[in-house]
Every structure is written in structure tokens, then in C-alpha cells.
Length: 401
Image 1 (cartoon, rainbow, N blue to C red):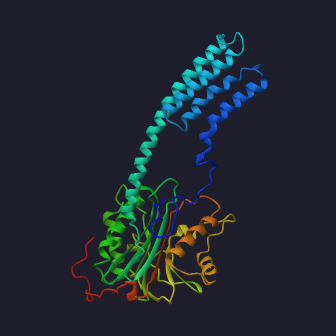
Image 2 (cartoon, rainbow, N blue to C red):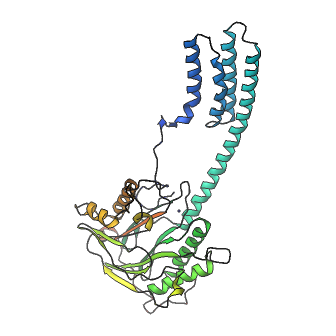
Image 3 (cartoon, helix red, strand yellow):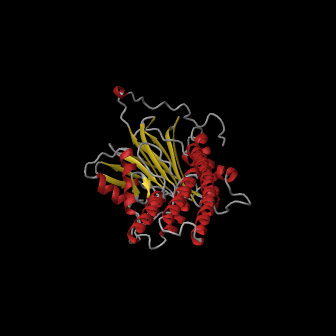
């Protein structure tokens, strides 16, 4: 999905940023027209007018059109034409010579075409800005910003779209405070494009409603799967093999309950390193009908100072120059066992930066990380205790999508 980043840590929008040569805030292409004019004038001085180097100036207007608007391109055309006439005038008998007159005409024609190209480029740029604005609004609607404090938990998250230049992709996450505790989801849609975005919308829309209504986590996961069948892109014209791997989690106090629908298991990161939280994987959302076995809930206790970290396979499947996958558990253990503070924002920032350093090439898969940690209920800090559970016997009304 840019990435735009959400949560506390600073993130990026493409999976493998590349350094670009820049001079005082401008790209190298912006300076090429000045270089072209300068080289022509230097060559004129060195050769002493023995060769018609002013022909080089014909190529300057197209270079200007690549980085400037129609007005700047028109000015460059006039300047180049004036320099060509001046250099020809300095050579007796050349100002109105046939080849030079043809050069003047060619410069004017190329300049006129360059002005049209610059105008079209400005229009395309404006369209791209509007399209990016729409994509950003779409992402903010799908992946809402994760608040740094939700209920009795601290939270941080980041998202990076795998396809360069895009803001929306196939990874998802969300956190909400419910009568049953703080619930969270992180998932990865198989596939890309509009089908993936539609599946993300179906899952998140259902989660934001059903998480408040269904006490049992496996039932909640079933409601998410039902939403994919009803509202996802799996119709006759959609992807018949579409599915979503997901972790549905519930945190109350130090206890975390997890339903694993084919997703990489979460990790608990603390002052003494990291440990994998075992789960009972079942079929991904969208494929549950292939098995009659119900999903199982696993329960773990977070130790003091530990952070619950969930991620998508865009993190764990990042490859280095030797083709090795990124070892999430080992890297987290190595980094945080030295006494570093394992706060949610610190963990997310580390994973993001470390996978960037690990990756040897541009990744095509989306990446998402979600980190949660308990905040001690200190009245001096204004952290309220979790709300009591008014729906201990189940939903107050039938669950809806």
C-alpha cells in the first residue's frame, strides 16, 4: 500500500530508495541546459571561431523542456537563437549564410515543439499530483493512522508499498479498543492491483465492525472470511484464487490471544532479546471452506517490558545479495538483547531501517509492521484502566458485516 507511513516512526514509500545526484536541491538534469550553453561558449573561445559550434545550441530547448515550463522553454529558445546569431556575426560572411539561416529556422522549430512538450509535461505533472492526492486519501481511509496510545497499550506501525510510486497495496493492519480488550489485525493479500485493494477494504471494514460484536476470536475470523466472500473481488470477473493471510489478536493486560490464519507468527521483543510466539495455523481467510477444522486460539503471556511485533512476509522474505531471507527473530534478538529499550516505535523503526540495509535490490512485495506494548496503569500518567466487559455472555445483537 508509500507509504505512507503511519504511527510514530518515520517510514518511506518505496521499498528500496536510491540516491540521486543533486546539486543544491536540484537534480542533475535541471543543470544540463547550462552545461550545454557553457560547453558551446568554451568551445567557441578555444577554437577561435574556426568551427560552427553554435549548432550545439539547437539541442538546449528540449533539455529545458524536460525540467521547466513553457515560459522557461521559450526564453531558452530565444537565448539560443540570439547566441547562434551572435557567434555567426563574429565570423564575416556567415551571419546570412545558407547553412546558418537553416540553423536559425531549425532552432525555432525545435523550440516551438519543445514549448508544446513542456506544456504537456506540466499537464501530466498536475494530473499525477491529483492522482497521488486521491491515492493518499484512499490509503488514509483504508489504513487509518494507528494512535500512539490505545486503551492500555502503546502502538506503532508502518507500511511500505512494494510497487514503486504507489501508495496502496495488499498489506493491512488495524487496532481498535473493544469491550473485550484491544484487538488488532495484520494481514497480507495474495496478489496485487485493484483486487488486492478491494480485499483489503473488505477485511478492514468487517474487522472494524465485527471486532466490537463477537467475543470469540475464531468466530471473528470467520466473519472476516465471510466479508471476503460477500464483498471481496472473488466474483466471476475477479481472482478466484484470492486469499488473505492474517493474525487476529486480542490483548488484555499481559495476555495476548492469537488466531493465526496462515500468517507468520508474531514475536515478543524484550530487554533480553526476542522470542517467537507459537500459534496454531489454519487456512488463510478465503480458503476456510477447504477444511472443516475450526481455527484455534493460542494464548501467551507477555513478560515485563516486552513488545508484541507482527509483520507481513515482505519483511521476512527480503533478500540480501546472497539471496538469503531476512532473519527477523535473530536480528531483533541481536539488536535488543544489549539492553536497548524495546518500545513499539523503536522496534518498528529498527525493522524498517534494518530491512532496507539488508535488501540488495528493489523489493516487489509490500511491507507492514505493527508493534504493541502494555503501559502500566499509572494514575499519575493519566492512563485509565481497561473498561469492564459488559458483553461477557456474547454479542448484544447478531453480528453484522
